[in-house]
Length: 318
Image (cartoon, rainbow, N blue to C red; front, side, top):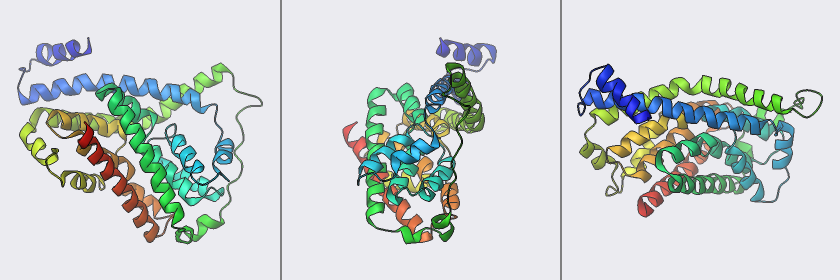
């Protein structure tokens, strides 16, 4: 139905010609905007309801004083249901550090929060199917857990800025005098939609617009030649290309969809996406207020190696 409606708007109402560059770009844009927005609103609302069950104090209690490895697994799992912008995950990262959560555990959260979250998984499922979404979930969590373990074992707490080690986080009061009602939980879901969708929709529209331009104007042979499976250097190049950019899953996935439609290899395209949302330059600038350069470099290097491994695995098995 949506396909037919976007075709009618593009080719009948606007009067563009099917098969032309502009016609295909406009069709892609009009088709993807409502589809991705509807998916985004639905997922964010449900997760807003879920978040009403979880308090910051309970979260810190879950993560602190856990055996080696278990805390990393729990932190990475928590990243699935937290904000999906890398910069918005940094304040929680600071809160966990100042609450006594181990450094490696907090890094597992920081990596997973933007890269493996409910929106990324829902959009991957909607755009590419459950197999791609499931494999991305497993490999993304593996990167977050292993990277956190590696950073934790390196014992680099002395590379935190001094103010982070001395700050203390006060308790966050619970909302209301008792457990929230279902009306409160639904209000939480609506508030979540207003806050998150209201913040990311420009990125989403911009991402779809870029994807539409790629879909309509970029030659298929060009993208297949640059990001195809046959090019061994394509995955590292995609990671390097993604680091200076900044977006979130909602904004970058339409671009990935368009790249794949032009012949890019799935693993290479996903490595590009993961580097954009997990190793963005703005995130590094914010982290510089918390971490010393050596620790930032270790973090970026470990995560980049994990992302490249994910890209190679996807290219090998799909």
